[in-house]
Image: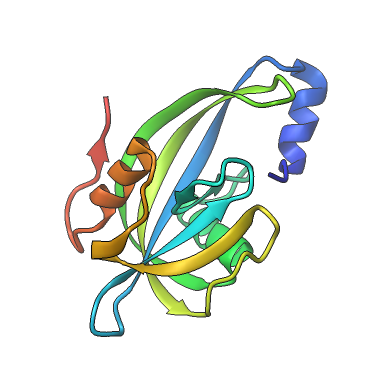
Length: 159
């Protein structure tokens, strides 16, 4: 996965020490057909299906980051409808020894346009899935999707 330049600059100073970073998950729904569909990407590092995820750039609004990540990773234009969940991910230890932990803001997003494909090399596939035919996902990803499915609701805060 490409590492944002600001993270590379931090790594020059802190080495492999634990970084606390803001992240986003974009749960994108397309509801223009007979059945609602969910956008998922297959990660190139793990092979797992997930909603689009990414790191918030310094000074960037998290909702803007979610929309940006969807466009960069899947070539799909989306808009944010609501904040669905806030939680903590990690700590994660990467193959090179870097350690990170993320505060994740999960957003429910609405598809505007675009046919998904793995646009930036971070993923090997991107496609729509009917909600009743989702592939197996890691538990925390399934929880993010579940939190975002209701059209309305208060954000959940995980403990």
